[in-house]
Image (cartoon, rainbow, N blue to C red; front, side, top):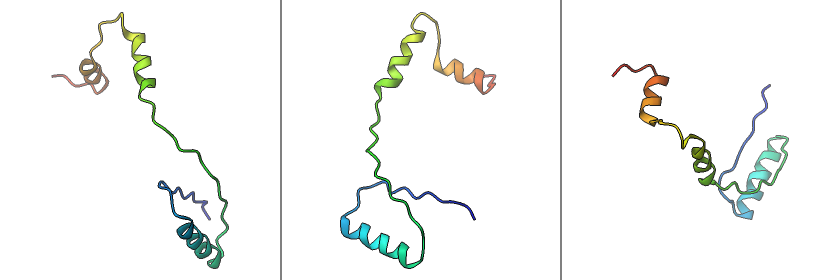
Length: 72
């Protein structure tokens, strides 16, 4: 039997969570509850790495062509 991980992406009202947990228990499904902190995307992380290439003549389009071996 394969193990399955179920991730709830949105906050759920307590009543709905209680109903879901009750359903799983009725069906004799073992569960483990973990509270995860909300992950925030930080767009600055990518832009910080772009500074590495500031002294190079690099074009994203050209890199894509080379990576995909496009001959146009």
